[in-house]
Length: 220
Image (cartoon, rainbow, N blue to C red; front, top):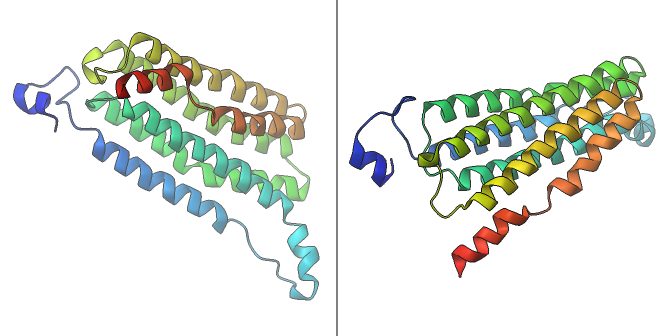
């Protein structure tokens, strides 16, 4: 518990304010398990006499694994960016973060469905839409958590200025539009939907301009 929370001893409308370190540690554990489960969905070929051919035919599993792993990696990185700016967490933050983790834990299943559909050549549209929806739900929850934190100044660190808060919000809102576009395109052309969602990977790893500017000012 932070010094402020210990000193006040008072409950907020959404419960006692708590140090978010345990929230981050628990979230890291759930995310680590999720990315580990992804590789377990890639089953080795049963026919070892034609092993090379069998390994090549597993390309849908490799694709689903790479795209999903990198997107979960983005979730992990941006989760840290967000919680680096959260000084204390109340019960609303704890609840919303729990729902976010529930969604993340569902991603290995969505990736498995996508790989199976691409491999069998049936149900690709449904599989891409399911995969996209699960990531879209994560994007929605990121936005809800951050908007809640932005509206309750007591939850934020004092070094985050308004420009930095807006920069983080813009990045999170962009995810809503980008992933939704890929999901809708996937309902029509599955390969295009996967390509659009995958194109989000390199962009979202870029630093957030306002947040990094704030970090430099704080360091100086």
